[in-house]
Image 1 (cartoon, rainbow, N blue to C red):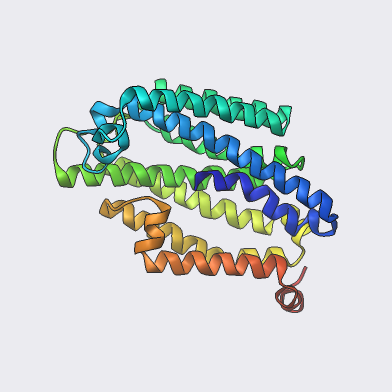
Image 2 (cartoon, helix red, strand yellow):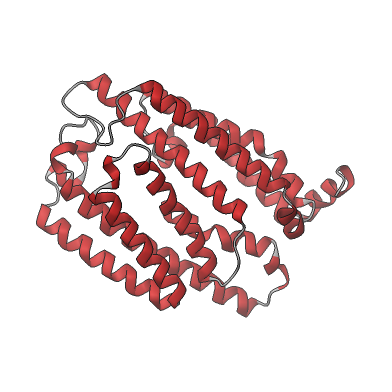
Length: 297
């Protein structure tokens, strides 16, 4: 799921600069984007396996993390180590198969995850900021893989959105642990709900603000024309989904996007409306014609 961020540049390239590209060019870029997606997913999976080994003692004290493969005993620690190292090496090789720029970005991501697992995950704010930076690298990797430039607005949107989702996870973990009791505590030291409330609020505001500023920027208007106005009009749906994730965090519910789609009908409706509105604004001619008649360019 997290690897989807790699595909953001190809989606917006197809809607903008790639509209007049030949089928052979589109096919090559799609293949490169998908290969980059595989590479970063392999490296991320490898680090997840290693992290489950290193955090097994802590995970067994948490009401939900104790069900992870190593903590539950479903996978042995040695087996997880072998799998983790193999996936990381495979991901690096796949990244360099896309190109040298993509390969070095995948390598940078691997090093960043190493720093996170070894020390940064124990530093308040830096732990979540590192995770958000990892998502941002995914988006940049997607652009480098298909050899296009990426908007600074898009980079900021990804960073602040994933920063918010990172704090959502911290709040979910904290509330769930407090409700269940036991000896688990946040390794980064988030023990105060008020502190996380502040971080959640600020990151949520920044995520929505960056999205709105991007849709109103000259860059977006140059790429999508009046379609950018359509994207701006979808901001209420962005705010709705952000609010639903915030509400789930306050209740200590699962922060998993798949779980949200399965259990939260309001969030699902908001996401569906946003996806449909984005498609219509960027790809459906009648919608673009309606926007051109209604709004000043």
